[in-house]
Image 1 (cartoon, rainbow, N blue to C red):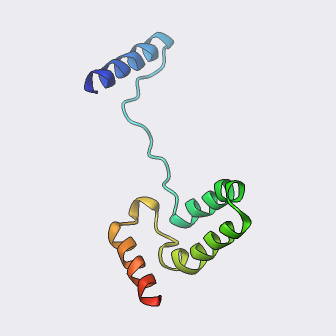
Image 2 (cartoon, helix red, strand yellow; image 1 turned 135 degrees about the vertical axis):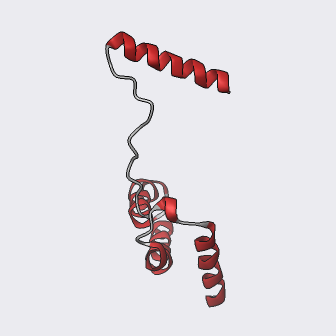
Length: 95
């Protein structure tokens, strides 16, 4: 695996040098969406096209009723296992 990475990296450097481009060793950090932004996009781009209308409606109900009130503003990389466990515990206590 390390050899493959090194070969790929070497090829990128040679390609950049050949084309006169700068060699960039790090990439600018992409903006991490909030849970709501990600879930809304998933509902729109995947669920609406691949699920029955009743399933899509249930997913939206769960997002609006349970996920968004608790985790709406958190970026995906900030949602922890502890957040998830607490959310499940809350759901179980309501059942």
